[in-house]
Amino acid sequence: QVQVVEFGGGLVQAGGSLRLSCAASGSIVGINTMGWYRQGPGNQRLLVADITRGGSTNYGESVKGRFAISRDNAESRVYLQMNSLKPEDTGVYYCNAKSGYRPPMNYWGKGTLVTVSS
Image (tube, rainbow, N blue to C red):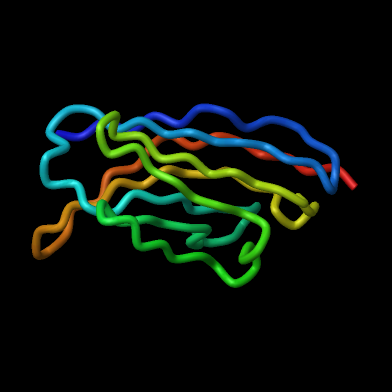
């Protein structure tokens, strides 16, 4: 099993910055991609950004140029630096760890709330 825990989150004014971090532990040998998803009220969980073990990144269109994802493979941690935050960035941010197996296994944290005030 893999455990995923998020850190960070909170309330920030529009235009501000926030950094989220996530740690994966347990049976993490097979984990390839780690990333962040956001879920707004009544909305589905959408990709914010993810990063492979090799460092390849993928961003949602709405955050390109504002958010940056990074990873520490040695510590099995992933970080999300969020800049120029907007009220529409508000939501619960979930960390995801995905195995490289077929079919892939997905492991989720409990989420951390980010609120951006206007």
